[in-house]
Length: 104
Image 1 (cartoon, rainbow, N blue to C red):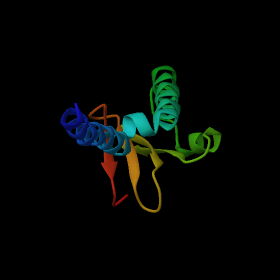
Image 2 (image 1 turned 30 degrees about the vertical axis):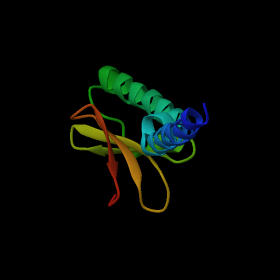
Image 3 (image 1 turned 45 degrees about the vertical axis):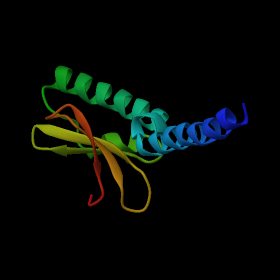
């Protein structure tokens, strides 16, 4: 019985550490609220483009909250938020994917 408990404790610690490291490295989970706010902003940009036929200028940024930003790039745009000093999580309208950028 004692041997089983000795083996169970390191296994449990390994599981807890794995879950913690996964949580820290998965922005989709860690920054859920910011990503949802960016997705709402993407919806507003796409609605504007549908109605007006072009992307809004950067003044749309004035209506966003906190760490979010919007940047038109030709016929496409980037929406994102700051993760800290110089790190950003970005949504690219061309690829329709999120990416991490440390050199923004």
